[in-house]
Length: 167
Image (tube, rainbow, N blue to C red):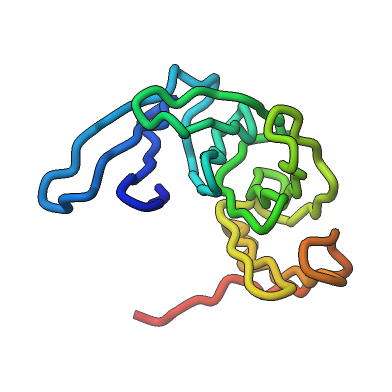
């Protein structure tokens, strides 16, 4: 799910659904995409585009400039299920079954991969801060990946095993 302005963007099976949340007590559906070829796993927003991690169909780019009829304008099929996505500048960072995929989305109709890092476990989610990507890699724990400069391909990983907490 992602929120931008008065709209929330959520996955409902294979569709991106747009909700008007200007009145939080009464959210209302205003539009939805045509079915995508995969199930929506994650959503990130930038400008008039929703970037959707859509499982086996990779990264899908949806134009939401008309909230009542969002439409797909581009896609990049990753090698495995896309589970989560975050954006920084013209790059989408996709948590993918085999690790982190970095997709140049400067041209929404023709995204292209510009880097990747393979993790030991399935990447389920990703977050960015400064020159680091934090990748939740299932049973193999948290992978912290450092970049040589913001938004450029990875230089080296730091792996932190899954922390077991006593209950």
